[in-house]
Image (tube, rainbow, N blue to C red; front, side, top):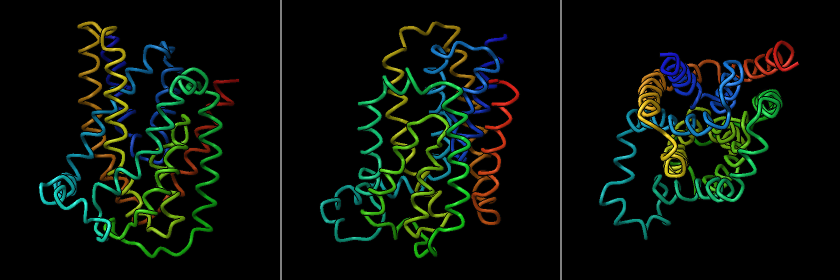
Length: 270
């Protein structure tokens, strides 16, 4: 029962934070530390339950994904370089940098960066950067994902690579990069969600294939519970996040990151 409760807690944290610019990986590392969980064992567990949160994005953006993947869109891909509408080439360009760097550096990241000290530094530093970007960002000129260029997609993809560091936040890194490319905050979030699906799906499947033999029947129940909770909570979190962005932008999340990092450091890590 205790293991099941732990799975539900981790699924709740994953679903709530995966698409907010606060770092789901950072939160899961902190919660694992607070609960004295085996970091090595739960690192794989946490990556796998991300699939529940990803399914939430597929559910909420299903019309856009169907449009991207329908037969006509795929058939016309060779001619899409002349089109402005968002297509699979944009998605591919945006995800290749993170997948390539993540594959090459995965061992180093899991060995040296998956720890609370790295998370605390990332939370605070990126929180400060978010506040600065909010102040200096250029006036938005792009207000729809169909207006995003291939160059935009590639640069946003490079920005996403910073999210390989626990505590940075994939959505935060992509949104900040997009905003500096004169893309408005809502469109930045939409594009961030769309490119998250293939990136996290590929990472999750890869991780599962590596470790599935180490899971037993009890672990399968934990994974299922974490997956379901992650999906349900992520649906609500994405809807709430998009509503908040229309009124408050990223500053509240930046302040939260800084506060969490400082509180966790002074009252726990020390």
